[in-house]
Length: 103
Image 1: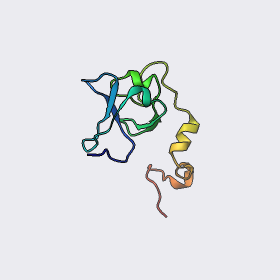
Image 2: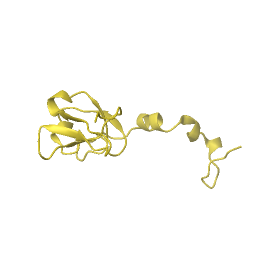
Image 3: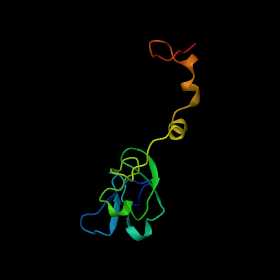
Image 4: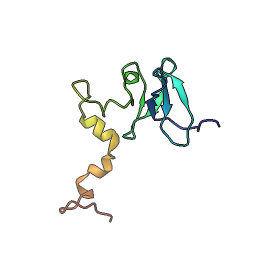
């Protein structure tokens, strides 16, 4: 059965330590870790990221925002603006009680 055409979410295979498999129950995709560097993947949190040597050391690779420690990037205003639409941040779109106005 062929694997699905989608961006995969990976975990290391227990029986073959140099291979990763997609954790989607309908997907049969698996790949050797040396061939995965630079490939796009989906983090368990839902973010899309690129696999690198550091993420491929983990049992279940994840994006930098889910990581722990000093290497975790700080969230900046520019990052928030890329996620949240600037129109939602305008004062006229927010009522005094915190609900959005839908004029």
